[in-house]
Image (cartoon, rainbow, N blue to C red; front, side):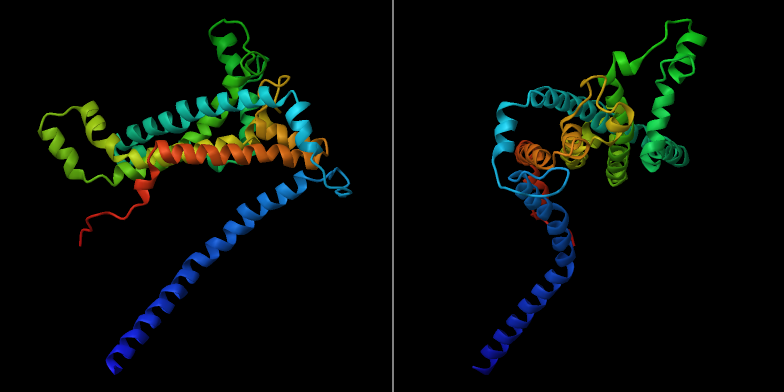
Length: 312
């Protein structure tokens, strides 16, 4: 009986220690998750059902914002189309594909050369947003002082190019893609470095060329990093508008007005806080739906499973 009581006491003590460790390690993350993710959504839902305006006063609770959203706002459809085009092009061309190419290229170079080129691609991300936007303003300047036109007119004898007026979607994809590819480059580079070196040696001994090594060894090992970058960057692009706001301000007209920027303008420039909150709930719903869909399609559940075989 004494032995059984002692075992029960030890089991209870172990359970208490496990709970204490869980609270110690997960507690701060849980608090931050509630403060910066859950609480803002709750506040947003509350504001969406009010008439809050520029004065920040709430005089009534109403569903008028949602009625207006569903029946009277003709800009929602076009801005959604711009958003999905922008997200798909930036994600597919730059954030995933170009980031992967940068990682493959720089890891194939000698270590110092690869590190040098990776550092160059990280410079835009380390620069202040305003500096990056001003750089693009100089590059695309429609006069002969712009960098593109200095090359096109001064060196090649072509007509001046005005990307902002003629190709605004291309402009925002390039501006966001060059800075977004750096994250994929870092994640993919780390994953490539983690592949056991003997696999590459064995493949080369068997006569595999560079493309065969990439296809049969590198890419299979990058499945989960590719999935992570796809999910993370999709959600990030859906709600980001900083560089679009600084470079094009959603123009010309509404050609680069992504939905997140449209919500910002409605809420903070027009003072329609309640209506902006209602609009932002669309982004929350789209983000949740996109997360669940990609979680299923990319089989992300397997990434979090405990390995069946643990190597000691």
